[in-house]
Amino acid sequence: MNTPENSQMTVNEAEQYGRQMDAKNRALEKTHYLDETPVEEGKVTPPLSDEEIKKRTGAGNFENVQDTGAMGSINS
Image 1 (cartoon, helix red, strand yellow):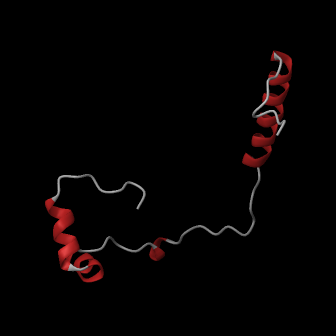
Image 2 (image 1 turned 120 degrees about the horizontal axis):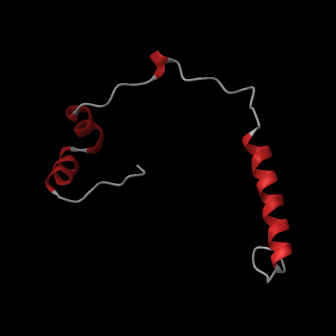
Image 3 (image 1 turned 90 degrees about the vertical axis):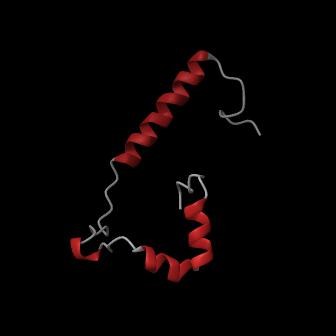
């Protein structure tokens, strides 16, 4: 596959490619989506209590996580 991402380019070609990608990214950043709606203040749910977490995950799972010294997943 001979694309700019995985082939050898001259300095001028690399600079041109970079300018093209910058222009593309700027155009995407300026895109405004009309169908977006802000989150209403009343729609945000409060944090779950420990009891609610135990009910949803099971008491054993909850206790195991509390007892380990490991950090939980950042993305979950």
